[in-house]
Length: 356
Image (cartoon, rainbow, N blue to C red):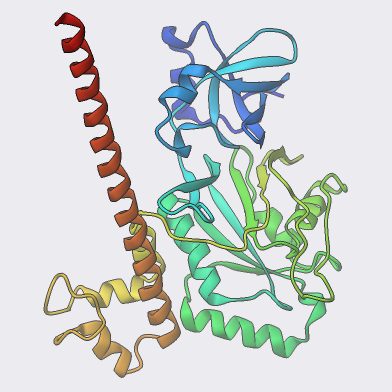
């Protein structure tokens, strides 16, 4: 296997051949677990950790490696290496860290497409889907919805779900899938191209790992079923993992996500709710919040039935989350700046006292 088989993009090829990187090995992070990384160079795998300088200079979680990253590293034996730097990313899929206001959790990086898996039997939720779409669009990743477990419902339920989806967003690509009968697996395969990287995201127990096993024609990944008592998915995948498929595509399995909070990138919300965004350009005031303002084109369209009310309410909810996140980040930066200034003054006073 080569770096090209791992999906090395053309734009990084010249970079890694530059003199400044001649003393380093280049690899791609294929697994991550508690700041321990497995990095593949194509013909070898290394267990790696970051340098102390990377850890000290990191200002946020984005400065740490993630599955999918291309990194420079220095091997110190046949199995271990130290990661020196992260090469420029094409995309970064992230959500708000659970229970940590103003912080991001990195899901994976350098992704081309995301398969958003929802079980049509008990997990299909358009409000949640719009959240997944938003984080994908914010990262510049093309989303594809996979409605799994179609073998557990009748044709009427499938038609009802598809109708509800198309009412909210006609532009979302979707695939109907049964991992049991394998109906729809061929359609997923048709999306996968050599050298491109795909991630599989969704709640626990919706069939993400089973789908990947079907693509691999093996039982490489552990799978779990929906709990009969709670009707919720069981956590099986405990870490992110990058896998090269036989056909040449690269796919990343991710743990199930119960929460999907918005970060400070509002661009994805605009793409997900493109109909509302386009109508909003006709509002009387440029800072219209589309709640109760006079001359609001969005509210007029809502009253006329041109905008789905469920979509409108979800749009406002996600905007508020994004605004809260941005405000929290701004407040943290202000505190860090004040602390840094206080520390600088303290050192100045110490030096002045020593001179006296």
